[in-house]
Length: 90
Image (cartoon, rainbow, N blue to C red; front, side, top):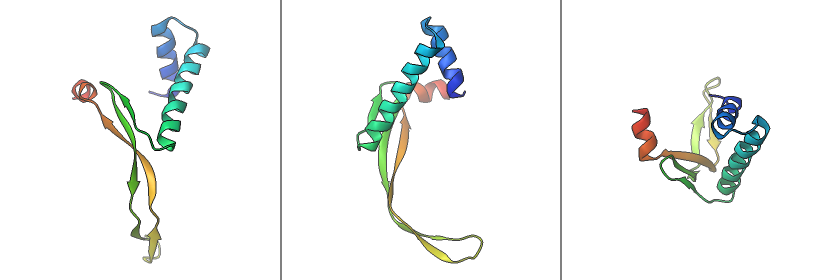
């Protein structure tokens, strides 16, 4: 499902225009992004939790040359599905 399909489904289910549904979907996604960027976790009960996690610096290998390179530490988003989502997919 694409973002456009999600907007269309939200508009249909809520009985609102696609433009209004797109605003809501964009606001939710921006809210999640802003929270993760500031280091907070976002919990949607029954759906799952988005949280920022820290990856350690490590040594990697360039597949073309075979040489080693240093991969710096960074923060990446992680998603842990909730029980209701896991049961729905399984």
